[in-house]
Each structure stands twice: as C-alpha cells, then as structure tokens.
Length: 371
Image (cartoon, rainbow, N blue to C red):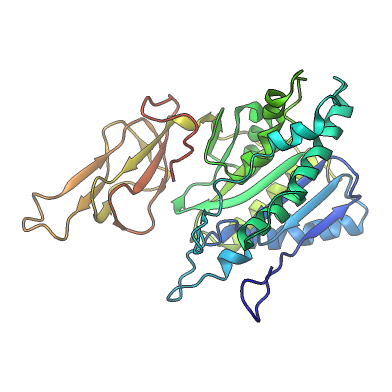
C-alpha cells in the first residue's frame, strides 16, 4: 500500500523453475535494512541463476528477493539508515513474525492421512492459505503477508543478515543439524548455532516452526517431517561489503542449491566444516551495566577464556576516570563471535557475543538473543 500520497513501494522477485517443481528454495536479504552484505551477495548470485536458467539447469524452483524491506531502506535520519526497527512503532523487523501453525491446523482438520508425501503437500497448501489471510492493515503487516506468501511453502528458506562486527555464522533449529552443517561447510562458517526453541518470532523460524507445531493443534496428531529448513545466515559485519567476500559467498550458496538438487551441476566435494555446531544457549552475551565509551581488548575471531577482559567501559562523566573504569569479562570459553560497532554504549547493550560449547545457566530458553 502507499505509505503517503505520492509515494509507492514494491518488492522485486526473481523466480526460477517450474512453480510446481520441488525442491523449492526461497532466499532473501536486508530484512534488517541496515545490513547490507547480502545485498551485494545476491547481486552476484542472481546472474549465476540466470545462466543456469538459460541452460535449463533449474531442476526445482528458486525464489530470490534481493531486498526484502523497502520500508526500512527508505528510513533515513541525518544520513543514517536505522533499518533494524520500523519507525512507525511496529518494532524489530525480524521479530514477532506470525506463527501460522494454528491457522493451518484449522484448515487441515481431519484431512491428514499419515501418507508423508500427501500430508506434506496438504500442509503446504494450508500454510499458503493461512498466509493469504494475514491482515494487511499497515505497511509492515502487508510486507509480512507478501513475503510469507512467497516463502511459507518452501523446502529451504535462507534469510541473509549480518551482525555488527562479526565472523560469518548461521542459526537454525536442532532438527536441521545436518542441513545446517552442509550449508555452513559450503560457506566456511566457523560458528553455527542450533536452537530447540529460538523464541522471538524471527522470519526463518516462522517458516520452519509450523512443521512441528501443527500436530499440537490437531485432535488426532499426525507426525510431520521438519519439511522446511529455515536458516539465518549472518554474513559477518555491517562493514563487510566486499567483492571478495560476496563472490565467495554467492558461489557457496549456488553450490548449496546444486547439492540439494535444485540446480544442476556438480558442486564438487563438500568442504570440511570448520567447527561443529554449538547450542545457541551456549552463547555468552557480554553486557554493559551502565553507559560509557568502549575500549576493546579482543578482536573478532579471538579464542577467549572465561574471565578474560573483552573490553573496558570508560565513564566520561566520572570525576576520577581511572577509578570509574569497568572491565567487561567473558562468561565462557569460546570464540569472540561479534562485538559492538558503535563504541558508545548504554546500559544493557550486549557489546560482545562469545560462542561457547556448553549451555549457560543464565540463558533463557526461547529468548533468542534478547533483542
């Protein structure tokens, strides 16, 4: 819909293959509109898919949305794009996406037979119908309805993001451990996080979750396979918009599509996975108790030991700056996955993430990264 007189917004959608073919992959980027590495990567991937399409090499179907959030991309304040949150008050663009499980289950009542192929097709039809009935009273609601309409019946949903300053990393549900490992190996991703219950209502989970939630809404539950691999791919940090990275990442995504039988061609041997996947709740979130300026002692990618000082927080308001310094320390052993790009922090900012291997007692299930 038009957000104001004289203005229009649209999504560009690249579609490849027979719309009834399987497997189906859906790939989007810049849902958080201040995260730009994926914009360049998909500009590299689309010509590769164009060439494969011209040669008859699309065996399944691929849907690519090269910018998923024209609302966020249009938000500029003082030359800055604050594209993580909708300025209309709707909140984080990648939180609180609809859970279509109950609506799909209502449409499926009494129709599932236990035949896996038939039931998967029926569930996808029900999910498409539920997505089509989503409310569209605001621009943000309409955007979500349109995007879910494109993605909800896919076998693979790749939501491409980035962090502040970070290593390449991925997030997915523990049910998709093997697929996550295959994608991460192609990308050379050193940190790959698995959750049982992510929480937060992120876009990738909105697509994957119904496959294990729908049976909970049925009078006679039928076992369903986790038939949608929803994954968030974090392409390093916001400033890592580089030709070399983009070329390598696009080729890795293309090989993943080949390996899943969606695009023809030999992807070659699967590279070794740099590190085994680790639990999302093993992620230590280093937070600031008050405002101040950050001085980092550690670089992204450093191996960290529990108790090591990650950064020092300085208080510009203190009469005795030395006495007011506060060392911020690691709560686990692991890899310094990311750190805060904006070095002026406020109370509660999570200024570093350390990817460990052991679940942490303070992490709450279903809280995602609590942002």
